[in-house]
Image (cartoon, helix red, strand yellow):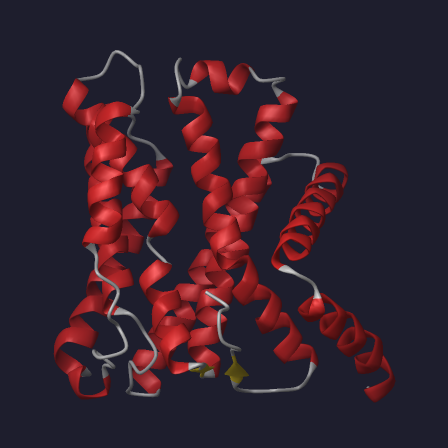
Length: 272
């Protein structure tokens, strides 16, 4: 086991010594390599979306276990859960009035679970909630997302208000994990169940991003045209990519911690 860890440790140390621009370049190259690999391995790229939903469900299951069995919400961000509830509620409304499908039922189940998590943090497990660490101001993401949605939204034939709401939920989803990352940055030490949950979010969002990118490539850009005209199609794709890269740094340290046999994840300064 130690022999296997040595090359991994050497690579991780080399990556840590690189300047930020080199790290960003390595992240982009790694992402592109993973996309190419998925394109050849997964023949039906719709399966990537199903896989993303499955991994997300696993992450939620870990969160439920933490709250019910461990009886603590330490390390969890209430604000991230509230942002998640907001964009899911908006997306559900848009789904009912614009395009009702199986994803609407999935969103409904996820919203119900998220509201339960919020209830547990606010009332049942309030004594273990780290409010002083959960200090990310929500208006930093809410206001920019709303303003951006007013100017860049779908160009379909639906009601303008509904199109703006749809854009708001797309932009909010991309940044909803930021308060959770802020909590982990403030604590520096992430206990296993929270780490598993956030890692599952990162994997799910990478698979969702891969699904979108590969669908665009397979359709030779026709999918973007189908989404409408103007900046909206590009913003949808950018939002998916942003979701992935926001969590990429954390996922790197999570994998490093797992290979190093550490149960508790310790984050260095400046990770988020």
